Length: 268
Image 1 (cartoon, one colour):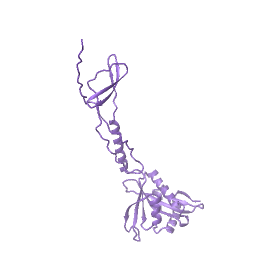
Image 2: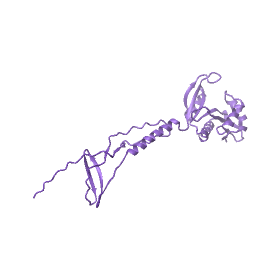
Image 3: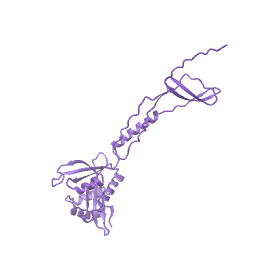
Image 4: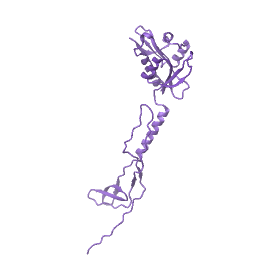
């Protein structure tokens, strides 16, 4: 049985031994200590039932990044404990801590161009993407793939969401449904005005006589709904508008067309 737990200073010697056994990239003890003391929440070890460290992930936060960016410095699992999903569990736990503790938006790492097993893990299982190729990154001259994974919403994503939200709010506020209530001295009538060109049709409710009006509110539906650009982001899509919903601009001050009065002849 193997368990995953947070690394501490007492694990550093075993972590270094695992590194020396598995990887050509090795570090001095002070470098491990620097990680543990500066970002104690981000490094984890895989421990067997006898308390031996059989795998680890060494991680930190980039100090000069524009947005909170976690970085995987080193990941290793002893050969006899591979194919058990330990590397995935170590990486997942570290990334979760980056988000929970530091609000990380990105996680980055470097991997040898020829390390197919590691590339498969990062690309296929953990969903990292190649950001760029850094030539002769390693001491032996081999190129490295600089890889990144988005963990949270970036500033650009938030700006796009705010912009889309503002558009939705403005569309909602310009959509108006007007009810006109006419109050006379002795009667109260409720009119719904439907405009057909220059004519106005009044539907009366109740037994009271309609009150003549010379002015009415006009509504124009000339505006077309602006097409929303979906933010390119993973989790959040802006709410899609119905194809039939268009912004309606209310024009309260516009005068309606005047009716022509016809005189009726009364027979004597």
